[in-house]
Length: 175
Image (cartoon, rainbow, N blue to C red; front, side, top):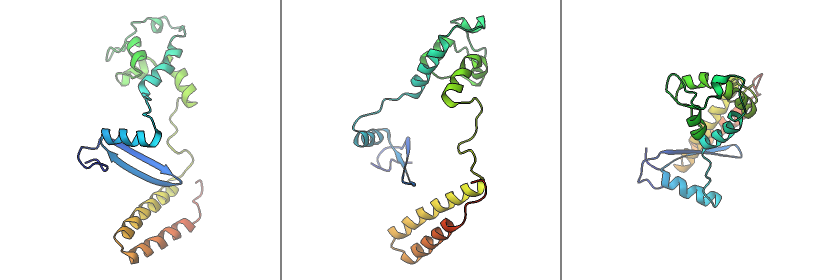
């Protein structure tokens, strides 16, 4: 997929912007993504998530552990060989087994950051019917914009009416 901004390079940055319930997705090359970020924010945000996570872990991992094997600086994952020291430096686990191996140290951090250690899903409490309705409305709005762009006003009118009808429908139970 080519960059939607310059049309010259391959897109490797995928950006979604939601403003006032209007969703806009862009596929950009790295250079155009930087330019758009610079224009939008006036600076280049330098948030590196693994480093940020490592800084959170660093505080937790520096706390002495009651388990002597976890306190060892050369404590390694038996599967990939990742050491505690490497993990603290880059903030990334080396494999799925690392999660189990370092769990005693990760658990308090996960609980502090997320409030729990159990994944609850993206939108707890919203049922599938409600999500399908929202997705259907979004798809119709995209088709409506395309019909207006093509100046197919009959189809645009029909799509607009379909959207209004869906929006008038009562919210499903549990949503």
